[in-house]
Image (cartoon, rainbow, N blue to C red; front, side, top):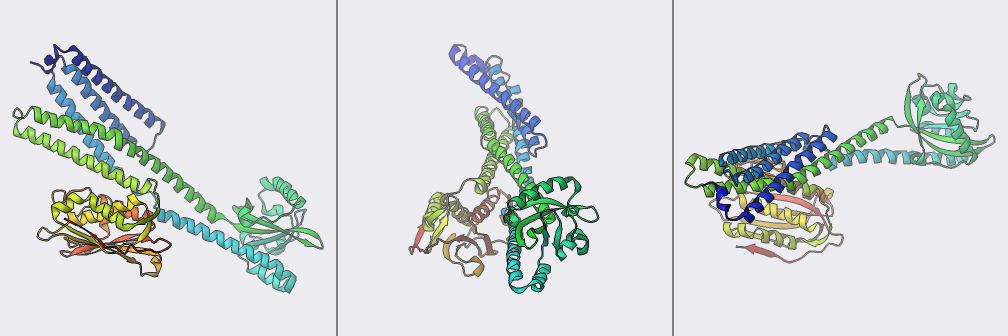
Length: 523
């Protein structure tokens, strides 16, 4: 008798299934339309291929629900099995596409690279401020030491210096002005300032000049106007002008500090491009995280559930090969779910809002051991710690660091040895790590070859097959990202067959306070 016939005397139950499956199918079919609209509007996104593949997967999921309605009266279970097999194939393909997206995400500039560019810009600003100070000293030197010393100083300044009267006549120009604009000094003196300005800007500049002389003031380099200079050969380049004024026998003169900012403009443009790319990439990663955490996991659970139901219901009717196929499909879906969860954890480690404050690191250690209590008990591991300090940290994130490192020490243990893991902390001795706590987690596990010590912190880097040790290879990448968000760094020392020691630095609390209490978690 077909499956649907068992509902002949229960019409209410039949229509409950018909209505539910139809609404689910309708909802599933609406999602790809939304995704296709998004892809059409946002052409060129790195994740568009993934979104289209995911849309196809959702359509397949919706079709399984329509088949369920059909089966209530017709019982076409082979067709239903075929549709589910297609859905399983699409889910695996979508999972592979998710993994292939990771290299593109890795190209996003790191916080260290962005910080290096900011440092370069800040150095230039500091240098300009220093030049401005020298210019102020120039005026004092002129009054105190006379024209000879003043001239020497003007020539030594790294920026161009101009003295201009209200009518635009150039009264003074230093060596740097000659270098920037390509004119000899004598060719500039007594001439109109317009010779150094592109013709299309001269009329507007005259208006600004008159306005400045009407109410002269000091405009620091950073508060000056960004303008365009014109060299003798006709080429143009961006300049920044800082302004001041001096009283002379000839009246007020505008004192201009001129700087060629071509390189700075290039750096700013590059910085803006990278920042725009970072914002776009973060947006795409956020969209991916939403898809992975909600829309992708729910259909995956449904596929897994149906496969397990199929295995249970038709046990004894399916041959050994068919049973193995179902087992492999379920196992692959479970691995895919774990991989998605690890990817989300990695994303959150670098993007979720952190709350930093004073915390007793011993409490974090005990929380991590509590979370690992089953693994500690089953392995017989001895996990201990010495005196641990107060630190500035995000409680949840740093607990995950302790948990990842202790969990790895338990996982990668020697079969013939009881795992012994010890956590210690001390003030860092290296002057470059001043005011930071150095934590170390030492184990007696299988150890790591020297050539792999840097590699293990990469995403999805595994030194062993999944048959030997389970996991996706994301844990240490998460650990590194969390430690770096705390302003520290992490590294490892190890010997094969003797164990490993993971070290990481965390900034200390301003008023150093040790817990002065030792604790141990044993099972």
